[in-house]
Length: 464
Image 1 (tube, rainbow, N blue to C red):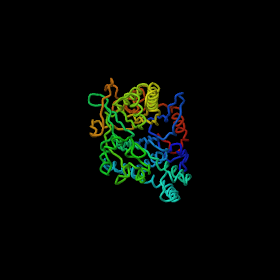
Image 2 (image 1 turned 90 degrees about the vertical axis):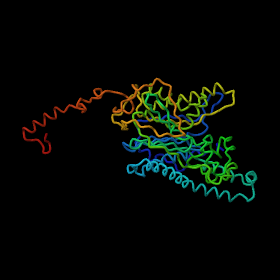
Image 3 (image 1 turned 180 degrees about the vertical axis):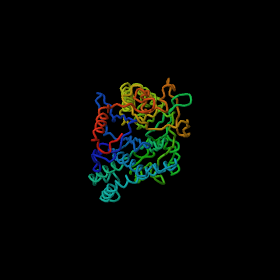
Image 4 (image 1 turned 30 degrees about the horizontal axis):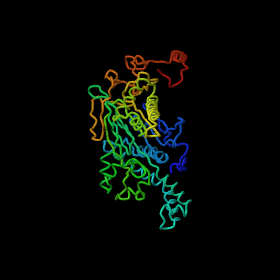
């Protein structure tokens, strides 16, 4: 089935309107393509890269970050990561005052994107039905393949396209607050310091899979057997219990033997949303990642605190790298090496023979980067001087990073550098009157103006 996966889709274009959106300079992205491990250690991909991500600045008070982990081609991921930005922008966030209004914007954006995507594949659904009409009635799939193999092959190809879906984990920074929405198992982590200056890791997203008891209960309420589901790793043709796209497991779920007992669509597109979380001086950095990152580390290290492990890797790279992209990519490269080395040392055992796509977005708020190459001169987040507590989420995990992190390394709340390259006012040419020192010599200009005034040849409109 995977060998039939389409490599190019007709709706894709070389340029998208999102290409013109400003990129957030206080963030960086790292990624790695999937890999099948071979005995000769030759690099081989199982499929084209299916992750998509965004880190955009809408204006000085609004930023959008997202990770979309596609499956069965990147069609759904491509569509959704572009359309979500449009839906959020068109809702005119500057008119939304309350947290509930903003969260409703995010919810409706997911719903609208899901509807838009299903509308976009209507022609393929119609074509599929036409092929079904060519199969003689009363035949099972095996018999149909004997009678009309070319028709069955065409249906299989279309089914693969209809199975294209994606997770979505987005973080919206709006009016100095953080909102997170997600479907699937891509993760969003917020790292902040507590009152004792210990760095904490808070998972703001929810993993929608068959290890989630809330999801199992939801599926049980629509007629599915919880005990059976606990033994499964997949729901139909995917591992997530929520996603965007993948019509085959939604509108076509009755075609799956293990799903047809359900009284309604078992896989949904409704997101879990949390916010708004005040961005104050305790907030250090934000991480968005596809499941390939934390699953590779879990498998390679056997850790049961993978969020903490990843945060530690990020902290290490903040101290070494000169850019945020360098931080993100270094963490991804470390995960790739860990997983590869684990496989090579355990290849004789039963285990994973491949690694999935990996994407990591790092958004820095207040964490120091001593080796930063450049530092933005304008603040991008105005921190609330009052320390606010993030609302408790029963599904979130809060763990301490075992690190010699102290408040002395935190950038001051009135510092103008969000990438944590700390410099004094005198270093950047700001005088005691808080004005920037002059760096262009206009003395000859003023001299010529005075000469023209004395000669009576000074043009009108020039008067000092």
